[in-house]
Image (cartoon, rainbow, N blue to C red):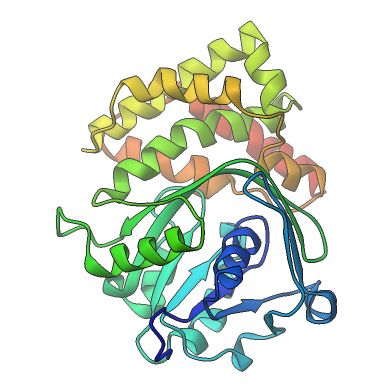
Length: 313
């Protein structure tokens, strides 16, 4: 573990999320260890490159690892993998968390922290939502397009206060130029993000459209708004308080967003597994358990499952 003033970080998954935030932390002088897969050799030789409205930068040397076994024990392990790779966590998390380090899960979906909690324990898990437009466009090359803030907090929400460890991570991220917003209500942050993720990720695949194409089309916007209403209602019945003004805000933020392909559409176009269960299936289950149907969202889920089955044959 680190003995310096800042904590030692591990990045499990150096993609659009991990590459950007991990790179910004490393640029600020924080010790960051990156777990890489296909681009391990490239990043080891050429470093990490980031283009961003916050400032372009190139880190010629970073701590790279091809396997989790070579990674040191870290204070904070950030999970930036897609949830479709969570079956790898039992192998990936133990090395960096072996001395009691905590895990910050930066993934899309609902209750996706449960996979990490089953390995290290609920008390050692934080969860967060990333509100950003960012893509990995080449080996060790991240292109950040717009937005960029993180909202994160304790997964085990017994306290109504922001914990000291959450605040410490937020402070270190802010010092690195990251818009990090600690919260005492992770569930509300998750459902707020789902109000965007469910319609815009799902419809981008079903309708084969970018976010700009969706938001510029009046018929598509009607579907989007119907889904947002259903997600907001589901949050309410599951006991989560989300400001109703967030419904209109979700649409307006997307109108102002640069043209962007959602992560689910990029996964589909590149024939990668889509995060259907984490982003849409889990919220549907949570709503059903409270006796609430989400008919428009349920239809979207069924359409995506059909597309998934057809595309993998």
